[in-house]
Length: 366
Figure (cartoon, helix red, strand yellow):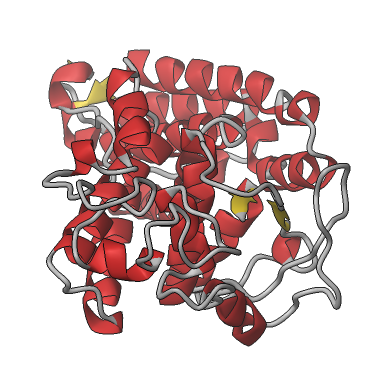
């Protein structure tokens, strides 16, 4: 049984793990399908199919709450639809042939989930893995000493050969190495699995972006009220020009793209990204009074965080884990942005700068 998960499952996992409330676009929106191969013997699989197995592993340590099943050509539908975490966990724990390897693990080891002895050498697959023997190679000369000698070697080689690893590639590589180590030392327990998962997920989502520093700014030494008023009005003019970015269409676009499985819909993020880039560059080019450099950097960096999050979201069909991390970062940027605006208003108030009603900087009056 070869698992393939679309990005919505991952989004569900991240939100279940990190967010207090699931996003509204997740309800009834996730897809959980698998391609069901019935041929006898050992199967070959690609990196993308391995990634599906990785996400079953994630279910065991966190899971999702909303899952729909869609029937397609070559895809087996499960009935009734899976709509509860407990049911999803039960699927993840399934061992169809009772050989000691979960069905999703059979995917990783390229064994047959319907045959307890895939290589026909008289030893069940789970026992072979436990004793460091290749379950796809008939014994007795079937021992392996490293991951490169195991059935996992093809996927390791495929990922290693790639020049530009996505976050999904990195996550899968790290998962594969850690999973193999736990299995190889007979240390795979729910406790060690969950500790490993917590570390793995933490590393995946805590990827920092480059931030602007004071060296990136054009500073002016004058800090009198008139200079600050000119500065505030310049900020206001830029904000008015790009006010459409405050509409927050991005999550709706991503939602529709997922529901429609449409790259064309997702491409609607591209002009928004271009505007964010222009928005940031315009703010970066403004002359900044020295006393305002901290709030200006905060303004630049929170918008850069939003831009970087959108870049990841725009690639979600190619890098699902990166896309999921982008959603998390986008939400954080929205929260941080509100704090930055508050700090700007406080800054101008503390400096005694009040804008007239017809000034572009009026938006910074408290």
